[in-house]
Length: 287
Length: 201
Image (tube, rainbow over all chains, first blue to last red; front, side, top):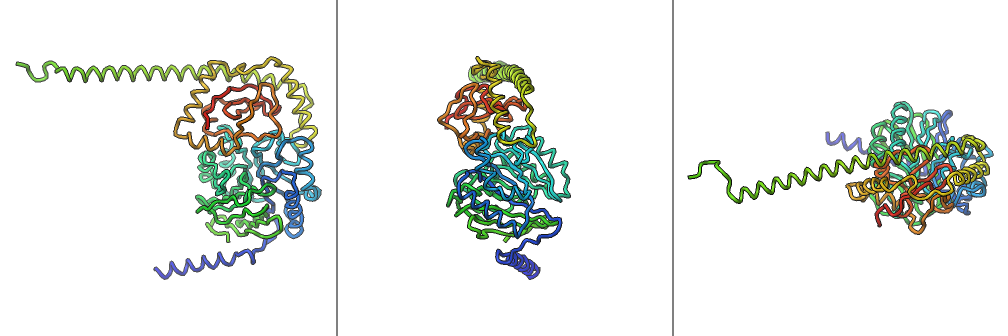
């Protein structure tokens, strides 16, 4: 019996090594759902533009169809000029190629951004949309009132269990960054619903770092708040971090093919800083 | 000779008196608390009526503006709509002052609600929520003022939102320093505010 346990652990370890960054490849399957993830990007500064350029380059080998935005889309105001220099110009090649952007609101965002056509929010501060076998729930974590909480529960419940459930919003429920850290109250409200209705993956920003958190109650949490802003060296030591990167800006690429979600995080300079695969039913891995 | 159970000694009498007095005080407290809750409920009802009146004004004003298509608007159109809406609402209530919606009685009810959160078991988490949302300390807003462009929005603690009256879609609560602010969401403008109701750091 003891030997059997040992063998199983060995197989598991082998799988982890087998998914190392050097060997990671997106499967690029037909009908898979492919998208990018950016957060806290709307500075209008050169690093945001450089990340935008890396995304354009990445799309040549990994043709993603849409981008999810984790909030703080426009720092310092939502005047027409802000939309231009902090969104339309840096991502112009993607917009011209027909890539759609789906935004969440951050604490620096004017609520009127929800009416902006390229953010695809349909005038709402929280909303849901579906791509292939993935249902996205976009929340307004600035203002989690009972009305929104009830909406979240209804939507998660009605979505059933066949599709992937991905939630994204601005404030992270789990974060090891020193500047903001975990949003405990928000976690108290949302996490029970996420567990009850089987949310698979959660993306957030707010802390200007990248972090992949060790699964909490079977849910994978990513913070990607460094696609424009950066707090270098801000990640603290933490037992919940599976992978962190706080040395430069970054963005994520995701492919969901059937029951597997492939992810890769790339820095502003094009270095791969994290990658892995999440299998939906079987609790596993990531390198 | 004194029989069993016959009469009470001075100490026992004192004990009984203390119990009776304490019981009376507790009953009094309970009555006061019930009364306070009743008063707060009535105040919140009044507040809700007033804020509904404001929402109706908002809807009326907005219905006279070119409609904003939610799906396909350009930044210029959004900004123009927001500015026009704010201007028209200001014109419709030029003498609006703090307390027009949150009257004196209402404010007392709000204070009780705030106190129940910031002195209750959620206090530390509620304070942390405000801190995480980048608290604004140096600005004081005025009624009919548009929310400053460059300032972020402080996150409103979910535990506080649970205790406050529900608002129509046109209006939201905001936290600015120690002030609780009522914001018109679409006009991004201050509708009313309750100053210094939130605790200090």
